[in-house]
Image 1: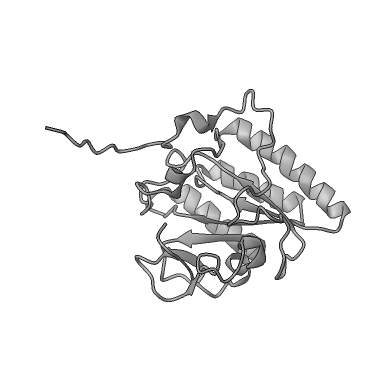
Image 2 (image 1 turned 180 degrees about the horizontal axis):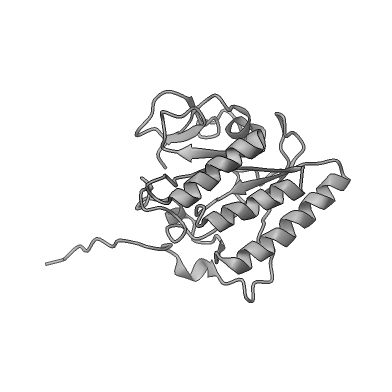
Length: 229
């Protein structure tokens, strides 16, 4: 008789895709590689950040995520075997400080802004990590971020309060939506738990990519609904 065992994962399904930064010779910030984000053209095509250079950051799913995430088991990282999942911690933060600053300075010389997608996989793993972004925002006026987080006050109050402070201090530049929080205006929700809001236009074939849409960072009074992947 065949026995089925339920595996409770605490890291990625693809451990060989994890990358230690000790000998990682590539940039930690990547140009978009997925069509959904905008691999056909890495510049924002519309909205208030039109012309901004887009970069992404990918961490390791589950290792950096709160277990309260409703997609813990069916994370879309389960379908991303080739993504480089970067080791989180002090080395990552040191590399980010240098790379973000460098890219922002070069973009400023061309009168451009920089928009970073946090995180293709993973989440905010410590308050100190959030404070790094606070420092980067203070030093780079053309820096912008968009992304989503599942961190709640019950998960980790230090991270949660630091994220709230970022939103208060940096406003629209810090476009990090709270995931699965349908009672909040600035949220992103699974269709399983919310019906009111704007369904992701890329998922409905109404736009080509995030870079041709801009709703997640422009529509601050609207919930965004994502179809279950």
